[in-house]
Amino acid sequence: MGQWSATLRERGYRLTVQRELILDILESIPGHISVEEVYRRVHTTYPQVNVSTVYRTMELLEHEGLVTHTHFHVGSAKWHRAEEAHHQHLVCESCGVEMDLAVDVVEPLERELRERYGFAANLTHFAIVGLCRDCQKRVGPAAWQPHSHGMTGSP
Image (cartoon, rainbow, N blue to C red; front, side):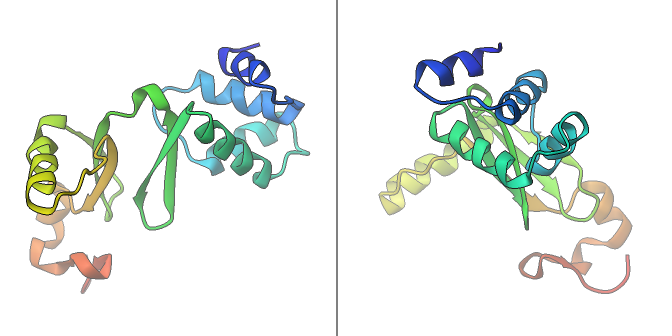
């Protein structure tokens, strides 16, 4: 039994076979994982599992402070251990490359939001979607339209 299983049992949750398998997968993978990937991995061992079970388990784990999620781009949420929360990402919506963004880059933004707008932003984990350097070279930065979530013309 893993640490998360023990934590959930201590907090009074019932652990089904499906939930145990999901927890084992999540505890064994560092970094980010999508619900679909968790489902595929669980499904190979336990074909009776339903994707909604994975979603409900992820929501429970987030509610209990064990995982958190970030939307990387349209329709793409990824989950990871809560203790890994303080990081940001740059995501290319053309090729899908993901890069870590240094925390010190967003600290001035956090201060400016607080000072100018009186808004305390939670910038501990998020993704900025755009176009990576290689894709800009390939298609040209003018071909990419940030508000359209895609490129105009042919790559």
